[in-house]
Length: 290
Image 1 (cartoon, one colour):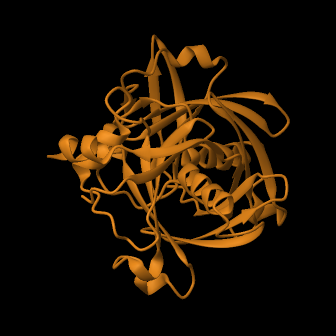
Image 2: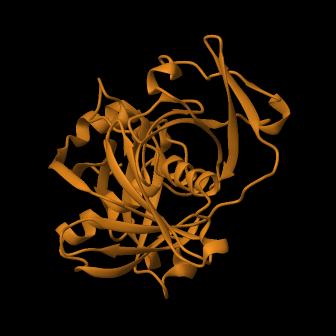
Image 3: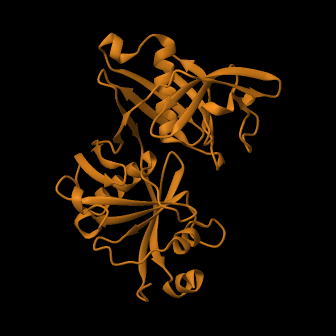
């Protein structure tokens, strides 16, 4: 780890929060221990993950994408492990690039381990990310909690989701532990479970238990899964109607707007907020990872 001071920013997208470390030339060594320490909410800066901002041409994992996307989101989970993608993270990543003067309003391509993602920065500041297409496996599950049971729709957004429409979000309980579901074989590696209520026409609210994390303030892929499940329930499947459909999805951390197009492409729109910037104490960091 370099002994020079290291710049950082802190940002969030619907309260999914991140430590941002600008490093255009990929000069920093960020081992998993350093990332975990930086994301620690008591002993570090605190975040759900870390956005390492690198030029694609400077990173061996992104060099092949440098012709399409100048910037690579080297995303890490809070425990330091490497992840392919994070929808809320891409919005904050793009928000940082605009703040730093690297990009302007309009269309932008961001390289991720999950491929090149299309991003649009609107004049008003909201950022839209293309999230890909949903897969809809036929086999669903029944989610049970406190004597109640709900049939849940199986939606895969690159990660597994079970979407249950309920009468009251309080019925989801505290969501500290994973709600039981059956048959267990449908999700052998666990599942993110969304509990959803209607707020109005094409307007829903949700809570989510993310596998391995408990209840979180926001889940971008979960909001996409909820919109897809709602569209099928409401008979507004764009592949059948030929018309894009948009749902407003309220989460504990804010609101996302999800649009599914007739070709299946899903777009997620929301805010990206930069909260602070400063310098990491290099002596602390060296001690923390030593």
